[in-house]
Image (tube, rainbow, N blue to C red; front, top):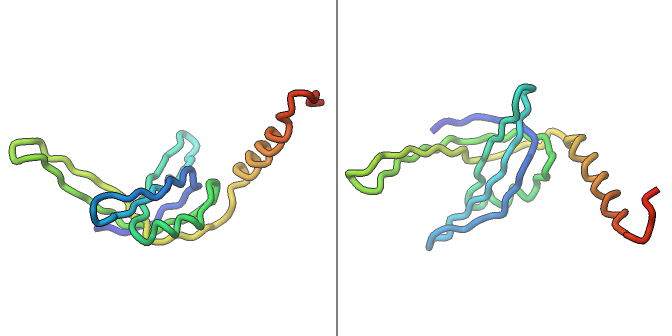
Length: 123
């Protein structure tokens, strides 16, 4: 296992999903990183009781997340191909600030919603 930190803007906060008879819980949070040439999307998994921590996050938040890398080996049967999987399990995070672009888009959405009356001229 490896531990690390990653910083980015919260792009997506998924709903908590439950798997199996034992009720394993997992919640996906995706961070967005723009390096100027392209946008990188970093998926992080909150698991079990840590799923509830993601309730403190908002899309657009600038965050730093501590994570642990988990790798798995999977093979259907002895004669099939071996596959390897990697995921980053979020352990803790810090909100560093609000993304100003996210604030502006939510304000624009509020104005757009307010102007939905078809009987009025928008100017």
